[in-house]
Image 1 (cartoon, rainbow over the protein chains, first blue to last red):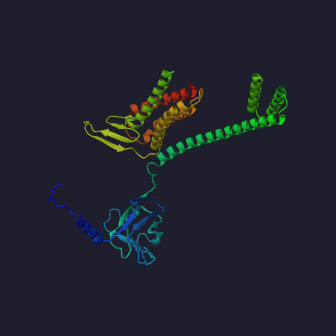
Image 2 (cartoon, each protein chain N blue to C red):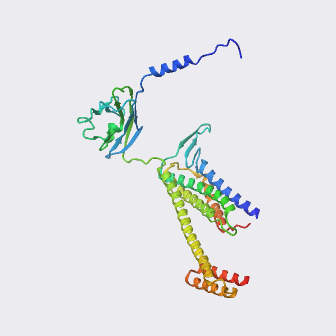
Image 3 (cartoon, rainbow over the protein chains, first blue to last red):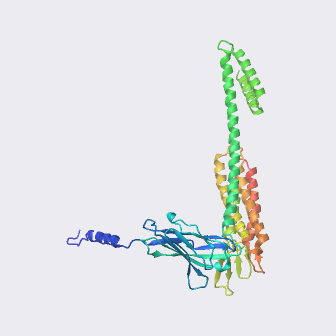
Length: 247
Length: 160
């Protein structure tokens, strides 16, 4: 313990922390879209747009979609939603092809573009403003239009592995289920047979001789074996023989 | 008795190693300076110093070959695990059915993978001069060995 060593009190550190927290700017709005979207010529594609805002969704919320053609420099505005009213492009290249499928309450600002063409290749930007939370970064999604949409890598791989493994496991399960049910039925028959034996023994009575007791039991077992399957028949015969041997 | 057990386990592990090597090593088709396998194409420059590797195409047949090779490895590993389970839990005189079935499945998977690759390899590698690499041959060798191992398990009876 060194005397006179300066001890740093925690209070200045705490003060700086509180200072930064209180005076830090409110978190900006964050917009999320897919990174790229693939579409086939003539079909339609959905451009998803979602956002996170530190404020509640206000009635003045606005969504704007801009389009920048591939290789082009300027971005034109193709869709706007403000004060609960969607405004769709009616004069540009996306005339009558855009459909608003978003819902501000669910923080969804997606649009659908119908009847794709190769000229639709490019970058789409989604811009969301939620007053008073208006500062934020927009998000971009690139649209690729193909003649035929290629399947993503791994779909066939996963499908084959999943199907074969699932099929094998299912077959095994089925086999064990059937075997379990069959074994349970065998066990139930066994129990019935032994219960019948005990019942016959009690019915015969206490003052009958040992010999007298043996034969009715044998008769009962043979009688039972005639009316049940071969497995139980074998078992009862075996039991009868062992009783004879014991005597 | 112990010798038999040991030789069976050695055979099974050998099949497993063959399957692993064949799936992972990049030597299914080789040519001058390039080697391809299920996962990537690698080409060496003429001086031998630079090696470029690109991932293979996303052809559906190549994906199915990858899937069946992976399945064969999975089945073989499960079969080994089941063998040790059944060794301790099976009743005397019982047969290692589950183990044998999985090993035979692994063999069938490897066979289908190698066959599909043989028939369809021109769809994803476009070099004209090529020859089959050792990983491809190992896949074909693993097939009868896996079948043999599986059949041995089915025939074997547990003695104590």
